[in-house]
Length: 283
Image 1 (tube, helix red, strand yellow):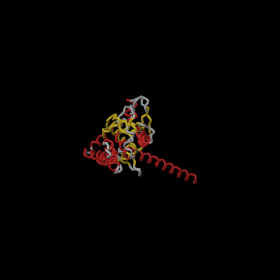
Image 2 (cartoon, one colour):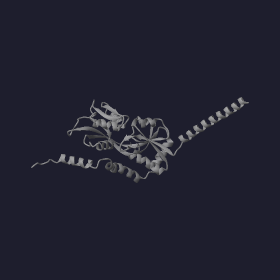
Image 3 (cartoon, one colour):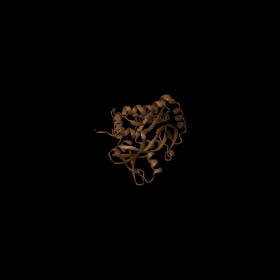
Image 4 (cartoon, one colour):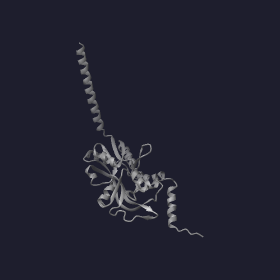
């Protein structure tokens, strides 16, 4: 009698475990198909486009853009801000995710479908400013130039200046820190990003823009072959009013610069430049 009761109870327990396992799998599958939540991947250190504050809150021009996307499309988004190369690796895994904004390159087109251009940007070559003198031929064969690993700038140098030696860094933070520490004397970076870092570090004249290398649009992108998501995001971007896009752009090109830089910095730079151009007469 006891043995029979034990077998019955064991059977009920196994059945319950099987049911619970199936229910959990079905719940996970349902969540993975949730269309109201879109994961937006991007860099955690690409100021002023996207970065994490000291309290680990996402901030930046592209963050505001995707928050506007969520607002005007009545949907939910989740930001995943990581190292630049990790944001690209994440997109290679596929799924219901979008890259918040990047430049086109042939290598990226192997695993991404580009949705639509968001904002224009340009990349420049920056060289160390030593007593008002800049190095000559910074892109000559054998010269060392700093870039972020996996960046469009790195690809651009390989494509157009293959004989230049690249010193690759994990992030913009480490790239600009190396530049200001004297580890490198030339680098290629987004112009807005470079201006942001040099100014906020209080060294706006440490490096100067030698030349603009390119002007390109930043695109939103989805995993290759995800046509449904491609169409959905394209339509969603079209729903954002033009005046809202202009407001976001002006905020980060103008307002954010005033908020982020010390109040004394820009007037001081202007004064230094004025004195450098005007000879002082002593009497």
